[in-house]
Image (cartoon, rainbow, N blue to C red; front, side):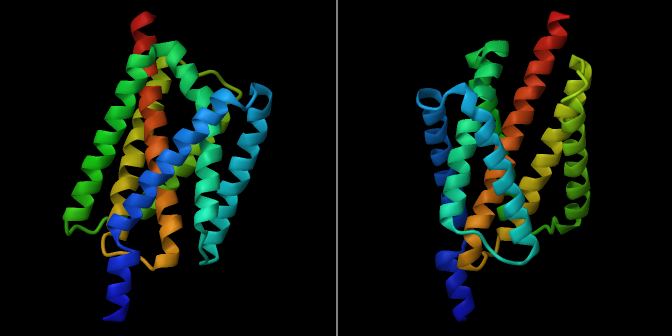
Length: 217
């Protein structure tokens, strides 16, 4: 009974979602900082720090430990700084209206899938292994793209796969958190949802940019 009460008040799905929403706001502040304060020459340093923190979070999770709110909000703020040039790049390529539309589409997809996973009694744990392997595949493709330029059609296929994979992660994670988590697990849960949202957004942007690129070819 005590465990149930703890979950319902401090580790509930609604609390996790509030921390996720707060993480998005912190990331937005980070974007503003990236726009106004951080010079472009320092962005690579922020990217390195972001990657180190991401690896640290993965190691912490593997060891069965948890991150704190300080880690969560520091990471999302740095993520906002590194996102700014990416968003601006897409803005120049496809226009601000399509970037805004992509964000709204991301919010709609994330919200719809979260609502379904939260209300549904279905168990999505069977997706875990497939999603992990697919995500590793996306990372490998991302590394290859640093050295090989992909065409619009290939980018469209990759973007479509990314959208499906991170949509799957939304279903998987929200279903995992449906009945609540321990209070100390909330920051890591919120970070997972944040990463799902941001990656879904980036792949939707890539999808739209690929469509625009194909139409111009």
